[in-house]
Length: 245
Ligand SMILES: [Fe+2]
Image 1 (cartoon, helix red, strand yellow):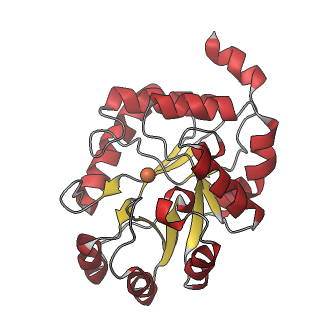
Image 2: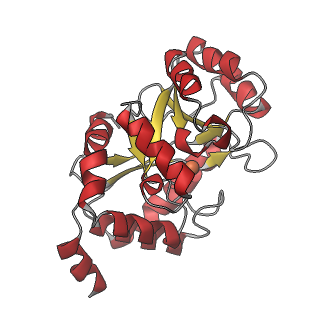
Image 3: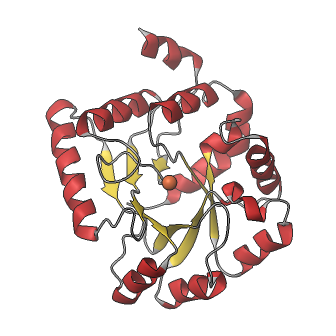
C-alpha cells in the first residue's frame, strides 16, 4: 500500500536513467549485507522507475580488496536470484568504486579494472585528505586509457570553498558525479551548500544514488517528491541515460 501511495506522490526517474553508483551487490562492502536485502532495495528502486543499474562496490586496499572476479561472481549470484522472482527487463551490471590508493595503482598497471561505462572509471578519495600524488594518479588513469569520474566531489571536506581546486580537478580531466543525497541535508549543510554551488557552476557531469542501505533509500524516496530536486538534477539524469551498458 505504501508503495502505491508513494508512486502517486513522487515523480518517477526518467526511463533511460542508469544508476551508476551504489552498493547494492550483497556482502562485499559496507552496503547490502545479503541477497535478501539487495532484492528488497532493487524492488523499491523499481517503484521509483529505476530499471538499469551499475553496481559499484568499494575497492579499497586493506579494507575491501574485491577482485574483479569476486565482483563478477557476486553479480551472477544476485542476478540469478533476481531472475527467479522478477522477469521484467531489468538491466544489471557491475563495476566498482576505486579508492585512489596504492592498491589501485597496482590494478591500474595490470589494467585490472571495471569501468562503469566505456572507459569511465569511478574513483574516490578520503573525505579528510587528498591522496599523496592526486594529480599524478589522475594523469596515470588517463595514460592507461581511462577517464576518471570522481565520486561525490561535494563530500570532500578539504575541498570545500576551494573553487579553484575544483576547477583544477576538472581541467586535469576529472569528470564529477553528484550524490543524490547531497541534495538533502543527509550529509550536512556544508555538503549540501557545496553541491548547490557546484551545480550552479555547471561542474557536474553525472549523478548517482550511492545507495548503501534502507536509510539512504528512504531519503531518495523523499527527494523524489520534491520539485526542486528534479529541477536541479534532471539534466544530470539525462547525461546518465546517455551512458552505454
Ligand atoms: Fe560509494
